[in-house]
Image (cartoon, rainbow, N blue to C red):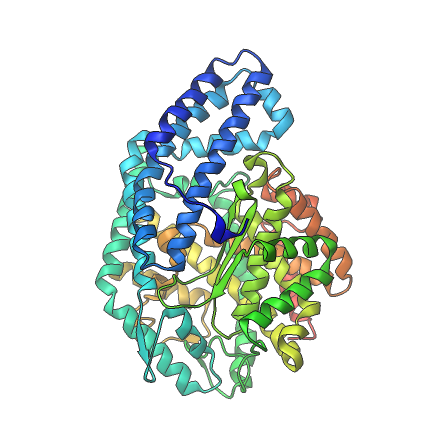
Length: 557
């Protein structure tokens, strides 16, 4: 079944209530391990149906944010999902208390139950209305950014389409397109500030209802942090500041010299070569065709996955009017379908998005061998290793996309992977400060961002309106929608660079490590998967020190 053929019927709260109550009562009354197992399997099947209905709405609403039907369905889900979480909470209380828990753990793994315990900590019936409001605010922010219609050079573009001009070889084009983008964001200042004020206050209030001083502990629980906490993350940020920022500054100085500038303005940061960055060859359809060849040749496993995804029409990758920005892979477990969503705009991001989201999709596809959703689903840090490492493991096929510009692409990819780390930890530290001090004013938040820019990206000369006021963070959707997610990208990047380093001397060995990491899906924690695959622990300072050393010695730099 293709994505477009997936039927949709609203799964109402009223329909869900009797089914969940029945399952909860049956689990509480189970008199044998076999009976408890039967109930748990039935619950998982219902959960997959529930999530599939949510996924279809989410994706179709993103594909066309003006489609009134799916807009209304998304609005319904924003209200319904937190109420449904009450039903899930009640079931999980019985699941954790069942006398047959040890039997279920032996069959399905103890990590499922550890993760359920974390989920329980992050929810209470007292916060249902708050979660509903959070969903409304998140949807409002997404729709605001998707609604952007920016006049530039006589044409109208959305944010994703305008991005291509920010990487143009002509500096004036970059400057003017960046100014156009900044002007649009400045016009949204009041709404952006008010929305974030409400989100911070709302999340702080929810956390306090759960017994926390601020939102940070609750935020970590919602991210399902099951093997590290804020102290380890702070140590990682310090290692980035000590070992990665100095090297990134050196690379940026070389970049400025290479493109004939004394310093990098905000609109120069993404351009690494005087004649412009490498651009993929061919149409989006040709890029997908080359991707098909690439995954056919990479391994038998990726060949099987790619052919299945093409058969299921599991891609929507073109930037279009009224389509929400960004890219993601959403796994619909009921139909064993990982759907890739992107906004191709004619830049190298098109290929990187294809390989990045393909990593997510491939890992999800391989996880379907496990019967239970809890075994298939992994933490976000693990998921980002799947995607970021796949970007590097596909390097031997980049000539299909870039031809004579392949080395240029590889250099940019490697440099960007390293220089991303300071930006990523900057986002994370910003969020820690914001939620530690939730009463900061909009101006004070912007001042925090500007100070962090100086700490983590000292090479940038930021004198463009919007950016100069410290408002760049308002264009980073994760800060509004997925607090504390961004560090997952950073931890995963450390692992991905380790896999890249090995792939330069023994690609097959690197692929085997990657596959070993992927094959265990969600049955182990991020740290256990990392160590089990023979990768370095990213929380060890020496790991980032070694990464910096390897990148610095690369022939590409």
